[in-house]
Amino acid sequence: MHLHFIAGEISGDTHAAGLIRELHVRRPELRITGLGGPKMLAEVGVGIDDWVQKAGVVGLWEVLKMYGYFKEKMTQSVRQILTEKPKAVVLVDYPGFNLRLAKALREGGYSGKLIYYISPQVWAWKKGRVKIMAKVLDLMICIFPFEKEFYEKSGLPTVFGGHPMVDRVMILRRDWSRETGLVGWFPGSRRNEVKKLLPTILQASRLLLKTVPEARFVISAANETLAAVMRDIADRVGMPEAKAWIEVGTVYDLMQRCQVGAVASGTATLEAACLGLPYALIYQVNPLTYLAAKIVVRIERIGMVNILAKRDVVKELVQGDFQPESLAREMQSLLTDHERRQQLEQELATVTAMLGLPGAYRRAAEAVVQSLS
Image 1 (cartoon, helix red, strand yellow):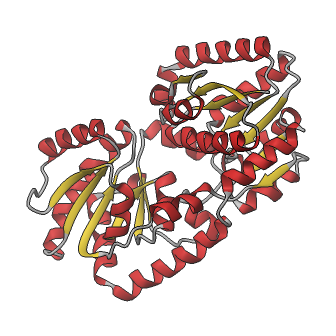
Image 2 (cartoon, one colour):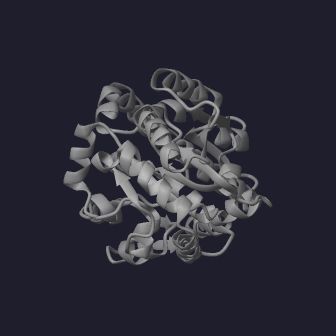
């Protein structure tokens, strides 16, 4: 049996690899091909085109600059799938590409199963798209509990598999005690995010030292390439060297060691919540990108913790609200107000309990196998 996977970002590569691993437990004979990343390649061995580093861009302008590249990949993928006729195509997150691909495949006559894993957040930006999805997709496997009802209303068969974060947190948990006065800066895993957020973070660090002189700062880098970018920015903007340093590849340990932190919008905010870090969400993109997003996004909050809670649990410092002064004030409040910090920790635990029980990839694999049979 042949399945074709499409994942276009680092997180999607991780989730696809986890699903493939569980599928192989149930169906060892499966042949897997597709677009993905190093983790999928490690699971499959051959047949995966590693493109996530190039494909994982953020922002309207950034995507437009790569229009030719994405158009070529779309054409290649449609041609390959229509030629090879896999039993199913599994689309993992990455809605800008994957939803267009699903539609193109149906228009091209593909009659196999189209299964979507890590449901796109159309409930936030284009609710009308769910009608199109219901026509072209055979199964939606979602990771947030409220999404199941949303998709099923459109007639799209949907399974709530639980969030893979629950399983990952069990593996990542260490016997760390939080270090008093240690502030964790988590400016994202993409170069353009780091370039946007880190200068303001460094300025906030200097301001915070004026009111909390015992504070110390650690900047989390996902890899050495990003660490080099951070060092260049620190050399240009200035960093209190005796009080701040960069650590590479220790993000999950830092989320458990730091007393408080600030986390770039995205998957990392949910990871921080699951690991109990009292934090503020930070987000800043190109003004044109933000304006375009405001036109289509239909929700008041962007942090998943706040969306799940339907209220402001963590502070969101977004776009114009993300300033050195506002960030320093929020970190000062979390550092010095023990009662507020403790309450935030309790609220984070309550919200993350909504993500379901361990075994998300196993349940997703079972849903895929059942759909195929």
